[in-house]
Length: 368
Image 1: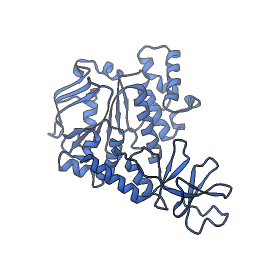
Image 2 (image 1 turned 90 degrees about the vertical axis):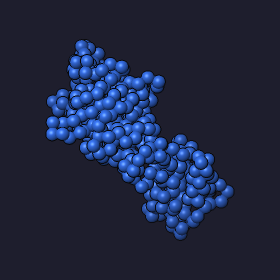
Image 3 (image 1 turned 30 degrees about the vertical axis):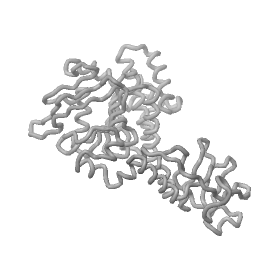
Image 4 (image 1 turned 60 degrees about the vertical axis):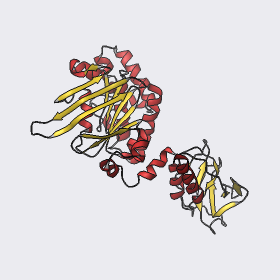
């Protein structure tokens, strides 16, 4: 990633009423990276993104893509060379899913058959069933529409993908799925991605580098997400990241946490201790036939055959995961014990809160 795919050089955008949307922006986006522009509303992050494909023209300064000033490239040609995904999927309502995805390849002169085959293969790439190809956008859920929007942006295999708050209008569960899908796509497709969001958690999760924009269009900090969390450049960044930035920073720490045993009960009512020689705490963890966690039974509830009393567990910890995931699994568990599972989802044991906190202290000591 030594080359810079996108460069801003002293870029300013001032509107006729005197409002400065972007203030002397200089920034290099490495080739093959996922760079996130984050900040509050009206701070210039979307304006900056749209200057890359000339949807907005800078007042002064230059924007370069692969060393070429974008102002020297005809707008239509420039935009066809980049994928663009926005908050509303922007799909054409009177065209089917496949027709929507095939739009850009057709504009580029590809045959109808070739464009359709490309569209069909992209449905699988973005995790949609091929059977959805004949449907119209109105027949899809919001999350499905956004996936189709991503597929359309990828259809001409552009080296650069611009994404303007693409997941902010879908519900949190779908959003988490789309974020995972994007990270997977990045690994497989080697695109340079610029992603705009107002959500710091999303920026930390997705970004190789994060550009924090401040009010007035000022670039306050541009660094890997861990550095933004651990060493905010100024008070604005510190305030924007929020008071829980120490918790977020645990996403970048992993440390071995001791496993403890837990009393478990399977679907046939048999009990055994998993993860140690003796059980920690008085709670019983219900598991299914494959050994995956189902829920918790409080002390005294595991004597009868009734399993309807179980409390649904919290998040799960996979050994080797971050200390943030370990702490979250403990805090979200009814028993206060974090359930540790293997890659197949089978219970390996539990983590006691005191052991998680001890691992956090050890990681902190190793850094200092």
